[in-house]
Amino acid sequence: MKGIFFAFLGGAFITLQGVANTRISDAIGTWQAASLTQLTGFLAALLVFLIVRDGTWGQFKQVKPLYLAGGALAAIIIFGNVTAIQHVGVTLTIAVLLIAQLLFTFIIDLNGWFGVVKQKVRLPQVIGIMMMVAGVVILKL
Amino acid sequence: MAMGLLFALVAGTLVSVQNVFNSKVNEWAGRWATTTLVLGMGFAASFLMGLLFEGGKLLQPKPMEPWFWFSGLIGVGVVTCLVQGIKLLGPTYAVAVVLTAQLGFALLWDSFGWLGLDRVPFTLQQLVGVLVIVGGIVVFKLGGEHSAEKKMEAFE
View 1 (cartoon, rainbow over the protein chains, first blue to last red):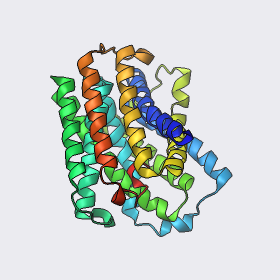
View 2: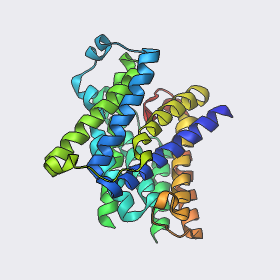
View 3: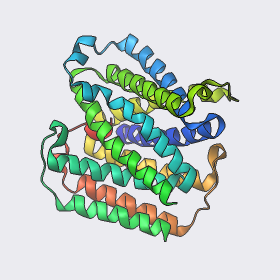
């Protein structure tokens, strides 16, 4: 039960994040909003890190530089998320975003890109994505 | 309309790539070391893009509301909740709940227009659409659980 609570709250926070970024973008501009929320998030995470100290620079050196730079994608992700919410609203944005996210994760798994363990296509995944697309079509009919 | 959908598609695709990359970092470093790095990279990239597209205008003073300064804390809340949820439920169920909550809250948000967002009136059709999508998420995530448990990467 506690696990469901945390997962549920986590999902709510992700949506809240998109909405908050959109509101801040309306007031001060999208790149400014993306920079501001990530800078304050970075400082907060740094504070937590300085308390728990669960990593060292040496550990980062073990990781391919490409993977270390993954966080930079957030600039485009936030810009895309905010622009989509401004154009089509929160529900449709999140729905389409989730489909793209699950579908591309699925494609990465199928091809074993980025060194992930290769997986076979499973019918429930195909049906699931088709249902999600059908849901978006119903949203927009 | 098409523009909005295209941006959502690009964002979703990049989220999946970022999840994979972040989980690679997380294989070596701890959760908060990883989160700090990811947000630092995100800030640097956003700031550079801003300079690139807007130049000096990026830093012009703007009318700030006090809560703008705390929006970054939401990200810390996200990580904390996801880590706890995945620990207690396992990745498959936790992610299914996370995705469902994301979409459910999105519908609530549009319907009530919270935080001064444009209201999108609630209709039965929208509810049906969201329920079908949630059904799709459940089938996708729980329909072949055996191989899904291998990774935490789906939502980090």
